[in-house]
Length: 343
Image (spheres, one colour):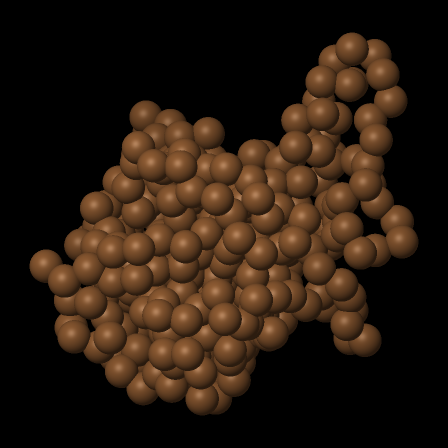
């Protein structure tokens, strides 16, 4: 098998580190591997597959001879993605910079892989919550069109990066020791006010827009419609940060265009690639972040009919935000391109 010169931008963060773990686990065919980050992280040493790599500061020429560039996300994407493409790389980007650009495919490989073929050098990885939700929506949508989705998310601190994970850990330790819990990261590091996340939850992810929704909530609306290829799906979201390290959870209410019994929905979900059904109420079997963290699949349970509308379903959907919600999805896009000679 041919191997590809690969770069990871944001290699020292939570998603960048997950990229490395997945590259090793999945035997991803890289030839040369370049680890890139900001000036602050440049010079760090990373041990990977028996070799020591030195993290380099990202500059435009860092992408010379790179064929696949995996971007972990952040503001650097806007600067470096076009520069990487100019130098011949295909960029798979985890940031929100290009997701709604009509010229950039927004891809979940199990859901809309055909969109990859139209890329012009940049392929966008969707928002973590969107990825997890559309994995559960797709098999149902294909069977019976979806009219409306109401989703409430319960998002782990991993969605806010390594610093948020560390802050939850330090707050729990401080409270257990009878000390005050310092808050400097959440709801978002750039905001003027920060709140404790330990033993709390925050009804704000990202900044508020004029209509009272947050950017995170509106990402789920636009991205779901784009990925599913259906601008008529009505989506409304409420996104909540909870004191969980990894794995996002979502309560998803779906209004369908026609009948679909819960038992049939379970069969469709169980047969869909990348989805695992855990749904045995009598045995208290249902997905939980504690058990889905570190797993590649999206887990679905609490599948039941909504009796308040003619054709409705309720689902409980859980998936590891750093894996399927970020690094794994991006790597799967690269694997698909390799397998189908699109790079």
